[in-house]
Image (cartoon, rainbow, N blue to C red; front, side):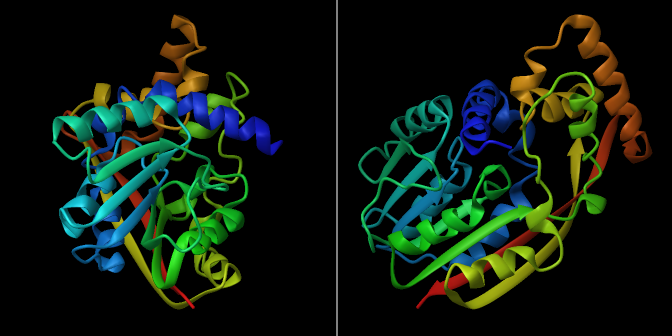
Length: 273
């Protein structure tokens, strides 16, 4: 897939998803974010960059860890994600210590060696060149700085994975052609090594994505996630058929009126030499 096209798809797709993202994903992604922050070992006064920050779910927790003497920069390819996060920073009174900017993960708008820690929570699956993004993380870190990234695990461990072929059968989405690649085996660990990081640690998490209703499960899969741009092109009939097919794909995970859908994450941490 053409890298420039993939970046445009991600940019405008997450613009579409920005209004729904936290509603449908904040609780479900928490286990991966908890482990990422644990491995980051953030300390008061540190400077942190959060890449593919979205609405700031990890960024604001990082700000709490580094305190008023630290600083945190959140970057995202989506202007609307950045706008939502910037508004929330102002609401929290954090505009002096937390900043959000639109930036490509493969080309961060930050000087060399300017951060103590670099984070990327579930963003690398969408980056055309994840190795370049990892090298950028290393570039902006000081010697001894920590990089931590989380990705979705192997496809077989993610019960919601049928969303991609369901959408592709209806409209060419050009989204995440290798979405589960970094969650296979030791792929993310090897990428960290290739990018020059040492002291590598790996954590694997099995979890359940809980949704109280079919409407919530559908909102997460279609409106609040990576297929939001393609989904916005569906007419009513196409939406109804896609909804029915997706609910059938997760029918085995039904719990009463809701769903408990299996999910898997891989989290890797490394140190800049």
